[in-house]
Length: 246
Image (tube, rainbow, N blue to C red; front, side, top):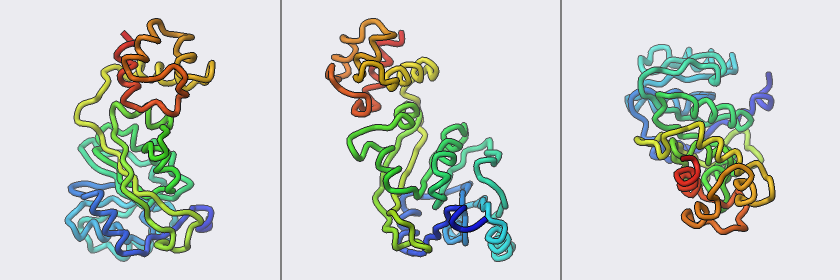
């Protein structure tokens, strides 16, 4: 496998490393996807964090393992992070992840019950789309909003990586909420997927195909009749669920 195949862009900007650590504020146990040459791994270990660093490239994994074999706070695992067995106790994920694997890595994080937060360097476009920075919201964010808060913490210029990627990175943090905003995951997911189905072109038209009392629920949530699905804020979906799913 080549670096291009693995989508490897190593973080070399020390200021960017410090910015990422300031946002992540890592403590306790951290899983790191795409450890690469270990710049984040070593920086977190210096803070007293116990890091399990995953690296799929066998040469990089061997090199990092040799460099850190005497570091009690670092465990290097050669393998695919998305196949990792997650801890049962609370832990965080921090990583400069391969852009091509973003969806799979984020999906793993969202499915993991003990995860407290994930701080990830992704393509800036991905981070903006999933945090509402364009004023629009993705299906993934809306589906998981009652359980996770999504925040964009700025941009990391592409010149801070080697090799230099074609786009800038975004600093994305996903936090598990202490208390879910919705009690029933299945009914919430059914509502959201119905709204995103595209039937009729608007949220109102899509929901009318399945639910009663849609107009009153839309008014209560502050959603106009002609709004298309991407412009409905996740908090408004929570309000719609409260009104329609009973």
